[in-house]
Length: 260
Length: 330
Image (cartoon, rainbow over all chains, first blue to last red):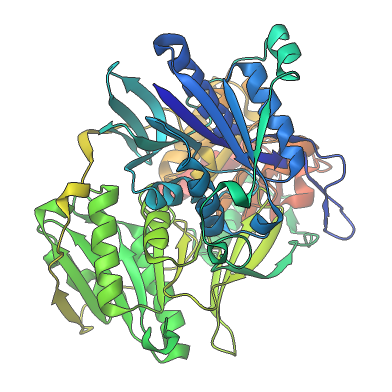
């Protein structure tokens, strides 16, 4: 079985701080990590490698320094790593990103394509399903557990708002994984040492057959009109009153805000 | 693409087991807001099996036209049949705007439809408006809510967006409102139906995703024992809210880690965040300060949580929450 996992390098958004005076983001010194949902996806792939001897490829699209997360994936135990990088991909929205990745994925053979549900820097959850559409593959998103019959059929537990669904799908197919679904293994010491001697393949525009008009900023239907921070919060109202009065104040505020 | 051919503000109506979901009624309410300055109509797309009788509800909440595909293939949500239905309707009616709920259905369907139609999609919008130049402006948070971005989709149609439950307001139902109901047949390509739904199981309480919650009642050290937790859970029941927790009470083993708010837990931005007995360490604040409305109750007047609270109450959290719950129930 061949598995491909799409991963993304993201800033650890939980480490981003706000300048309390200006309300702007402080991005300096924020570490880059493998997006948590994607890391769970790597773990799912590696568990299938453990049980079924699957061959696992990871691919990421990003700037050259995104190579770091591919080395980390090597250290976790993947077999092959591809960095998709080109200036022509810059400025891509989700649709143009999915076009570039789909172009690369057409060059690979796989039975199962894994992506994270969403990335913590954008939270859109769009690239996985959009890749699936470009490749004309079935998808199951919000994966919490995957069972494989050892042949070609997957049963996917899909987490929804008030419970879960069980879906059955044959490979090749696309699943998008929740970060809570699989706890990523640690990198082994040997893995870390070996990761640096392994080959990270670098692919660019020349390696994929996608019309340039579908890539990067040109291929992006959406544009950022403006970006802004929410600014420093104005102080709220404070009350020091007895419990009955306090309950009354909260009630009227919730009504005013249409919450109740 | 001839943009001027595209008209109408369309809402994909989500139904689960035949029940119209609130988020769709909220979107119809928003669609009315958007349609008026555009001098355009609100269309509701209703997909399901034996569902046509729900069309009047959508009209009562603000739809002018309900486009309804009532067929067994659409009984339960599955990506491919729903994508085919929406794309067929989009090709027939050429919407200018198409909105979906940012639910596990809308966030599965939206990107698939956008890729098939070759148009843009903006996820989890918190503000939608029409500019003076008649542009559709879609504002959404990014970087875990640390940054806001306004997105436009200038040259492609439909302009698609998803919105979470509770962000928009639904209009009160007006049963006398009149509208048109159009029955549409979808020419399905069944060869592409490759995912089978084996089972659907309803659960409550197990493995919560607090980051999806609309209302969070968050428990801190000041409430951290059995009695305190019971009081918190009672309020959560009344408000149909989820319970979250500070690191201190998670570390104490009183809550599972998936309920933890903050730097090492989850970043949340519900419509309402109740910080009960939480002092507000900076790591906690980072995880919740972008909530739309924050109520903090703490006995310590100097607690940092009050710096981010919209409404701060200094006092005995147990008594206050108990009383509040009684009044809400009464």
